[in-house]
Amino acid sequence: MLRALSVRDFAIISELSIAPGAGLNALTGETGAGKSILIEALGFLLGGRAAASWVRQGAARLAVEGEFDAEDFSPELRAQFKITSGPVTARRELDKFGKTRASINGVAASAAALAAFGEGLVDFHGQHEHQALLKPAAQLLALDAYAGLEKKRVEIATLHRGWTLAAAALDAARLSDEERQRRLDFARFQAAEIDAAKPRLGEEEELQADLPLLKNAERVRNLADTAYGLLYAAPGCALAALQKSVRILEDLSAFDESLRGDRDELEAARISVDEAARRLDSLRRRAGSDPARLDAVLGRLDELARLKKKYGAGVAEVLAKRAELAAELDRLENAQQRLADLEAADAEARAKLAAVCGRLHRLRAAAAQKLEAALSDELKVLGMPHARLDVSVACEEDRFTAAGSDEVEFLLAPNPGEPCKPLRAIASGGELSRVMLALKTVCAGKDGVPVLVFDEIDAGIGGAVARCVGQRLARLGRTRQVLCVTHLAQVACFAATHLHVSKETAADRTSVRVDRLEGARRLETVAQLLGGRAATEASRRHAQELLESSAP
Image (cartoon, rainbow, N blue to C red):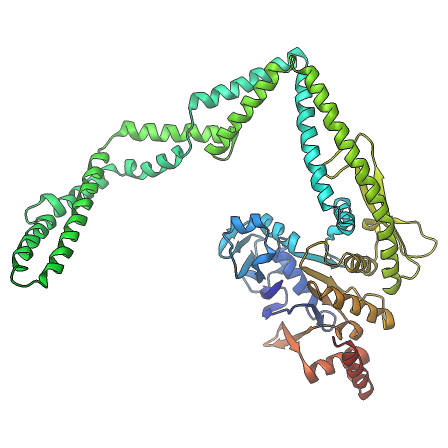
């Protein structure tokens, strides 16, 4: 979950921090107070778009920082950024020239890394936010999550990989003689180029380590000579003095046994100095001025750089490419002899994949009908009594992907007499947000996303419908963290944490503040939401009733 969010110099926000709680968090405040700016700042932090116009007037840069639970990070990101336990801090900055920089726990991170983290952490549902669920691939994932088909997806992906390899081998065998020879020549050329260079794991690091020594050979040798002389060779050197002191203390210990410990410590120091002197002597010898050796190292590094430019980011990748080339050469050189076996293997892999895809299609089609009914029921409660939602599952024969042969599309007709259209074609952000809420309610606990953000999900509703929206948001808050921007008391009263956003002016500058409301202050704010700018006794009584009836 999001434990803290700090924003500085973002639009009209000068500097503020919020600490959302577990469960449902309601953000209230007048229109233009800065509620949606906070949501936009969170989206920016998690790899979203950046606009230089966001930087507050007079500031050089803006910064957004968030503190998250370590469990929210994927295993890959934990390994990449060495995350073990405890809170994780993500930070992203944007300067007035449009340049950004980011970090995770102080380690530099790309916007793509933040986006990868954010994609698994937060679902944004707002009238102007990019909606992940608008993508057909995400709709397919949602249907599979609802139906509990994750293991089937893994099975399909495994079979698809096997069929892809079998098909590739068969294609290689079916190549024309001219094309096969062309590929053979190219693969042999690449393999020969790598073999001629003979790259070795760890070689580049060794060369880079030697380079400073070779480039500064004369200075290194002079310094090493000086240090070696002081320790070992010069008259009255440190080692000679230590040796003499050890002998003297050895003699003195015959008269005072307590000096034997001092003698042993000096002997240990003598051994350490002797070892250091030997290492310095080795360095003196290695640091001999050798322009030919320097040229050889630089030339070898250039050769490795050319290999990496062609075949991979590092020597390990180059060697992996060489292994791939060996496998490709084997397929191309022996393809004709294995053609019959390859055809049989391709047919078998294809048949297995088709059979599993067919079974998965039937499971998805059955689940789609149940999901349609469940979503329609939720939409009725959420103020869309005449809405019709269809979950289309179309199977295209002879088309196979790692997710099967199905294309899934959520279609909605918000009003009677209208045809169903894809979600991405819906104009109303309020309707779309309610569809999202309905889906999240129906699939609660199945998608694994720990934080949900709803921006103005209450657009165009009120009364009993608004109360139902609040109940569903609170229900979602039992299993995950929910942040909801709302103008309705019927929604805000269900929040476990109520954050009020307001603007204030000082020294002719506007800034934003956020207050955590409790007790009388919360009652007054809910009453204002009910009665307008000024609370009345009637609105206070109504607010008290709402808060009491909404308490868990």
